[in-house]
Length: 87
Image (cartoon, rainbow, N blue to C red; front, side, top):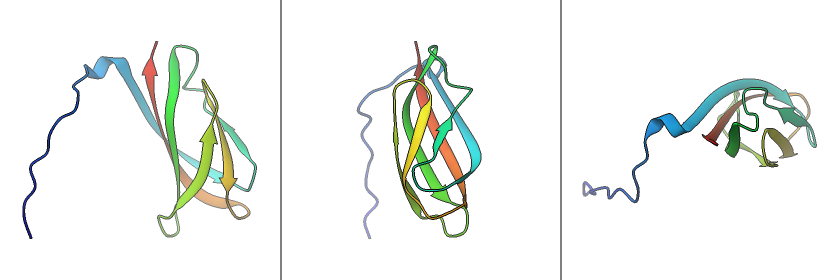
């Protein structure tokens, strides 16, 4: 095993970014509106993971603050990680 060196692609001041972790229960085609993301914090990435086994649940997100679940069972307990850039 070889220890690999990392290479920074870019560096940004943290004050321009916003992230939050949520607990949600979702089913297929549900939407989750994230009240903490508004026009001031545009949602850039959302990831949903099942609490039971850590596997990722497929989702998409529209501009601003809406996440749509596209690959889920019924009433699955999940963790949602959201990341955005402040305007």
